[in-house]
Image (cartoon, rainbow, N blue to C red; front, side):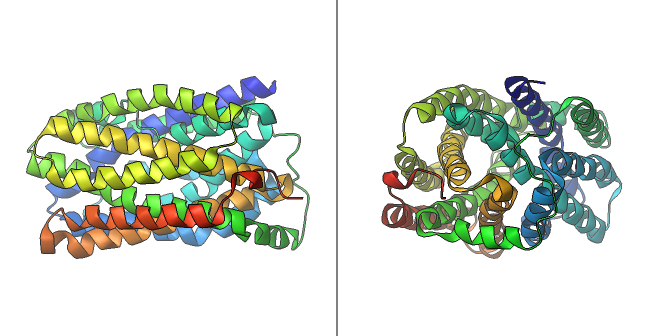
Length: 389
């Protein structure tokens, strides 16, 4: 299979898996709400999964560099495929936690393996577009929330069974048709990966890593609060909530094509990263004034757009600054900072939720994005945009 076909196959697989997990995201929240769990419990559940992910990420990166990108993708998909189907049979909170932890480990393997695969399978001149599309599709929900709401209305088990089935199908197709990048070194390397890892912490990438942390901190809170805002404050049904969140994702997919094309032609990735951080901070402040579903949908759209700006520019810079033998490790370190921000944000939502309702998370998001802008301006220069040697 040629490089372009392999990239397109991975992209379609990412969309399919993103759709699968979009189908269960909001049904899981609705199911836990129906059992009487409050926002603090849901936030802690997500945090436990993220904690497991952050603990597993560095070992997962080393594993990916040893076993290869394709095997890493398959291993992550297999973990993803097995455990979501057990969610609707949980009642005790402990079992929710067990499944969330195992899924977090699967994500720690799958995400950096996919990014490393993309960075090595596409030509250098197309890397900006490829990383933008990979970033967007790795977290895409597409029509998942709407479809998941319909499935959940049929029976609480349906969306979770469908999610596992779709993930299993993707793994089977990848196993049969997805090639291993020729540049991927799967030989034993001893401690070489640890030495390579030190390069990720050089000054030009310090701001990129912190920017990823800052955005994940803010977006992590908003992605948890906004669906609950629809369900509780606006009193929208789960189907209406899912439908409201579909349109922004279609808009963002179209925008991601233009962003990716622009990054192929320019080296100004730092400016795109700063623009995303500024936009995210502004969206967070404006969200404190939202009173209607239309306003919430518009701001959700802008939030997703800032995610594309930040994620596509920062992931491309990590790909540029890392070397092929240790790129899985580099991507894992990048994901580590993003996951760490999300963990802290979930705990922050839990702590402030009952104090000043839904206001404090938004102000804290603005503050972290502002610090992120300063960090990028101080540490990242456009002239640094070439791989380390």
